[in-house]
Image (cartoon, rainbow, N blue to C red; front, side, top):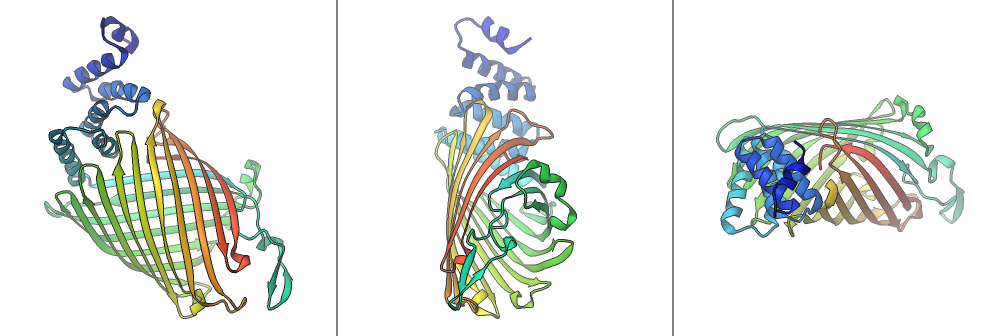
Length: 398
């Protein structure tokens, strides 16, 4: 029997109450997928409802879909739940953390861009008081980028509070300099950028917190040739500050070596903190300051780059979700550029909006569209650029 006749048969009960009662009945009978359909129908109309989102999360938990269960439990915590219910939800989140042994994510996208090579639009630059004409390859070019990436994490059980950590993160990116779908036929292996990263380590679990550390390594190939390899150490941590607020932190130290540029060999340190606050049952905000440090023998290539980002994640009616984000980074180089005889100072600004539609999924992948604006300002004009990108893709994160 369809939902509408069943709901109409319940006199004096509105549409929302009808679906809620039928969803709770299905859950009581352990028909979890039927319950999921009822609660999702309610949230499609009003995503701010905390109780249906809580029951939806519980149904996902019971069928073992931990990614969706965790997401909806966290949104439900923003809905002003009673203290006792909050403790129950935090217990579910702790159970998910401890029983999850593997995670897989995937993302595929096609992205037309106005400046695919991130280059200046200027035709002439001045070096040593003399004007120099830039070649077409050195200037701004529109193009099309195709990218596929996956992330596999396995955490084998070692003891009650200790897990292993193995991670493989391959990704491939292909680019053509002609901004049209017809140019997809020009995407040959010569245009590809392939990256393979891996991690191995340990994870310590405690009540409402987690600490992990280990070794990392990576290899990059560009245009059929080896481009870069790296190895290093990483440390991550997570702390649930309260029912609505979570703190994440990460520090990574890597040694980089470039196949055809020995002078760029050096050390890179990246650190960041993310503070996520659940405002209500449909809106979350994340503030993430970050710092990067890169040191090589040639001081004009060494830099320090403080920055940060702010993002707002919203669940909208009709199974849409909207992610708005912006970031700002200041890059300060240690010495004057040897060609331009001046110190390089950059501002990097990025603004992005992503709209995902979870109603239509295939193989647990949801379609999305995304617009991104990038702008770099620099004391050396050659390094300035602006880029507009419109991305169409599929993601497992929604």
